Amino acid sequence: MDELINRLREKLTENSDPVQQEGAKRYFKEPINCYGIKSSQVTNIGRAFYSELKGKPKSEIYKFCDELWESGMMEESFIASSFSYRLHKQYEPFDFNQFEKWVHQNISNWASCDGFCNHTIGEFVMKYPEFISRLKIWANSENRWVRRAAAVSLIVPGRKGLFLDQIFEISDLLLFDKDDMVQKGYGWLLKVASQVNQNQVFGFIMKRKDVMPRTALRYSIEKMPPERREQAMQRG
Image (cartoon, rainbow, N blue to C red; front, side):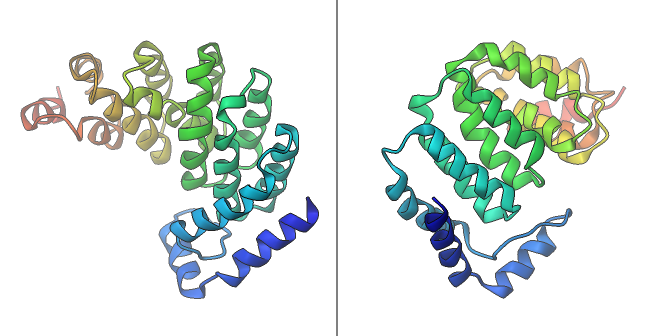
């Protein structure tokens, strides 16, 4: 495993671009550590290295992902996220403890949060919906990324029209959150849910539009018809 991780990191370093690296650091509001590699290149590198892990026990692959997450390098988090998602057909209920550890201890920016939670957590809760109760606990965390994770973990299910009641519950738990990254997270969640259940989402928003932060409100109505957007933006 150590030899494979070393080769992966050598490959990432070889593809590092100082200009891309500086651009990424300026793009994120929070401090990040990154190699400076385009996402398409990261995907290709990850795919090539996963071929060497394919067929190994799930526990070994999770251990490999652990090493990548611990590095704090953004591109390594993307590869770890893709590896854990590739195992989705093998998910078992106890895997959530591993996923929750990464969310609480290793996520430190919105890109790592969304990349991991949209796919790995989203796929997991579609298989084991009872774990959505844990996402509701995340919504009360002191960690901004854990709170965002509570919402964005339901993005993919929301696109499929699933878990609307739970989407509303989590949005209510985050409704007054002062952090703009959390507001954008649950606003995005409501937006994708509206593409399948527009009437219900619009009704939910209209009852809360006078107290919902403007950032969340704008995100949530973005895909709605102009007349509904106008109605929602009218305060009072």
